[in-house]
Image 1: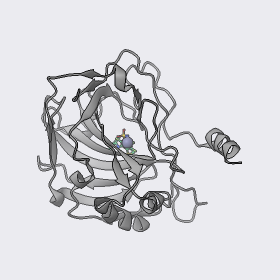
Image 2: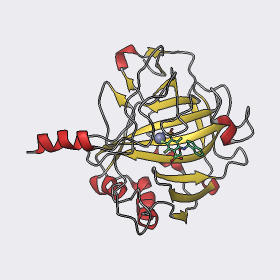
Image 3: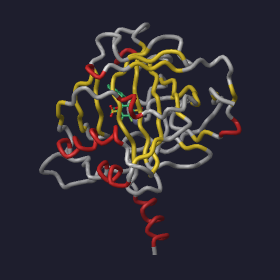
Length: 261
Ligand SMILES: NS(=O)(=O)c1c(F)c(F)c(S(=O)(=O)CCO)c(N[C@H]2CCc3ccccc32)c1F
Ligand SMILES: [Zn+2]
């Protein structure tokens, strides 16, 4: 029956590329966000997001996920406000997803798992010279997380979905232009925020996480398109790119703040 295959699936599902836990880590990600334990912070400002579609460079399968990278040599695609002291530049966005719709997101809300999660990765270009420097600093990065749930077809996502066959294998890359990722954000401004880490190597504790309360809806075919990507290079034995999420990490001595009551 399906139940045992789930258990089997769970037991077999490959550990995400990063170690389960980081020795000495006190602010690791992802976490389960308990809505009732989050604290409304009236001093949290609205998040200001301004992306320039002309900074969009290419879409790339790097063997972990597929990502869309942006030209970040100027303050063209930026976020500010919210919990952030400075302006952060968009570097890339990528997704995490499961082999089936029952799991796939990295963060969870009251233990609810979503089939996928979008991450928009930004770096503090006011304080640091480069993304690589910012990755090592406590206030270096800001990642916006958006949950994807099964529902209506998502028009904005389709341009990405249509490009995926061209990056089926690891290290395939294609030009991708004039895409504005704000079309992937829910219209509701509400978010949670907490101090965390990258969820892939180098797992540095340099991320201010901003997790949107509202999920965006995508349809089954769009989710399935993610699952036809491969972790493997051409010529290697094919391994489907699925379950590329890190397990939940302990909250330890952290508070999750909400921008809403
Ligand atoms: N969930 S997450 O937001 O922590 C996160 C990822 F999950 C993820 F897969 C990637 S990656 O670029 O695809 C793989 C390399 O780490 C990055 N990329 C970042 C991490 C390190 C690094 C170095 C250069 C460019 C981008 C990144 C990432 F920030
Ligand atoms: Zn991610």
